[in-house]
Length: 163
Length: 438
Image 1 (cartoon, rainbow over the protein chains, first blue to last red):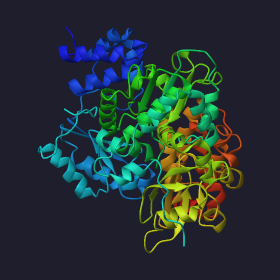
Image 2: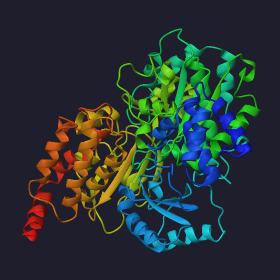
Image 3: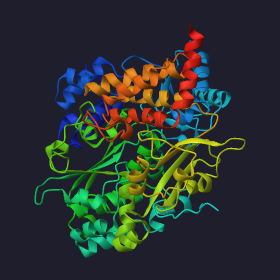
Image 4: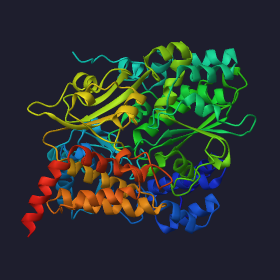
């Protein structure tokens, strides 16, 4: 049984071919796996290992280092709120606290605290599935998430690809 | 009156055409790839290298190292060699490369092609921060469009020069902005810095000669080649030639990216370009070059310091780093800012070197209690003692290190800054908080 769909397996092979060494494809293949299934499972990593010509342990060793790879199922919307220093003094932690409380029991929405997103000119800022949203308040941040939930906004995948 | 007028070179197109600057139509209409065409027609890679060297261009990623010199370290006649573009912008408060990638990808691509031609490499990688989803879309589209028009691929514009560019997304690790960690990550490994030497120019990606340059650095290259290195060197001041994008954030009226000519002052940056401190408040302190370097405060000798890489380093004990300026007013608790920075470094430490892996965590814990009303009078000295384990000369942090890379020593910069500027304020608070506990 293949983890990747036939179309994605073809894309995976194209990705591997870009690099002089197949192992370099681990990160892009892990993103592709998340695009497909919404998180990075052991089954996905086993197949990435085969494609990248390394052991599954090596793939897990690499992937566990990077925060964008979700090794447990998560919500369809990943809300990443920055609380680093510029956001710290402009209301980021209050937005994080508000969204965490509001979506605490909602399995569709995963709220996480993240480091600087490179959007300090519009602080406080957050991303929803890696789409930037800036100059937020608690109310406007929640409204943005609701717009994704209700389909007013089309979200990217949880790895940030257009779907 | 403080200076507030930009000198737009790398931001010219994206400011002139805010609605479509990233498209190939807009880019070519405003001259994109014409310099490439001229370079290939001339057929003299060594001349491109020479122009960049003469221009005095220094890397805009944070280390401010001379770009022409970096290129010159490549061993002659050793192939293949790689050009790797560092677009893993993660230094807190830095947001210029994201703008350049999202809004002028063709300028970057032209810079990559010209630079690859100069160093005679046929394969380039752009390591783009994983969170930059829109930037990835725009850059991959731009590469497709450039390829379709013959600016990229085999036999570019009939010159016989081949180049392929691969965009490689990161996955959320600040350390991958360090060039050897970036190379590790590009090879499919955990992003952990390598021992140097060998430097990447000798043994970098896949152990081949490799140049790693920042997005803004390479975006500047077409302009240097077009105007000539000598003309570019006329802009700026001393050995800080040209312009750079300063990302200003925090308690200012007009935060944002401004392209400024080197040679103005921090007063111009904060009170000119950024419009000054928000109403009803006064400047308390500012971080002059990203999160990793020591802070400056509301003193004339700091505000009137020349925005010149070497002047600031020699006279103020800090650096211009990645060009980000973070401004905090009198409502800010410096201990809270120091704690949050320490939390960042503790989270982003890759864990390879013990002083950083252990030290950043302990420093974060001590700063947490100090900034949350539980500090002890001896805590600042405790921080300095722990910090000395990572950056032995704490007063000059982060410029001495017991680690492979500067991440760990960077956590000592806020400590040195607290010691220099806020010791009395902190002492007063810690006596009060420890008194309240007993």
